[in-house]
Length: 133
Image 1 (cartoon, rainbow, N blue to C red):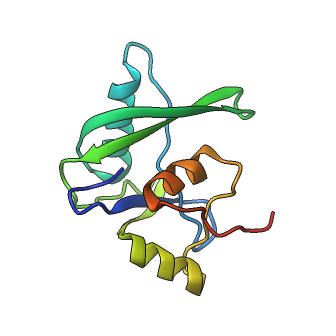
Image 2: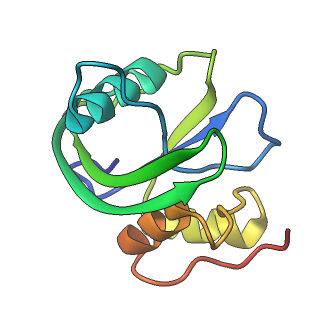
């Protein structure tokens, strides 16, 4: 999710350790399109309204036998209201803010094999710092 200032929205799930941020994720519900599910999941998790949704790539995901679909989505609002059930914290980052947060260890990048890492790199414009397993 990006905004008019070309910032990226990253979130931290409630069960993740401090500093671990990633793209938002969710599941398609019966009767909705994948674009509708992107808009619904983002709004449910962080209260952000989404306009344009563009498919980027997919990745097999072993649990729970799923296929991850990666999208770029453009926010039409920017005030964050985390749900507290799935997402503990969400923040907007400029490229410079994210670079600094990686350098200080304030933010840990997603693992390089993940579609989330690929989506962030697409926005970031270069490879993310590597992290050990």
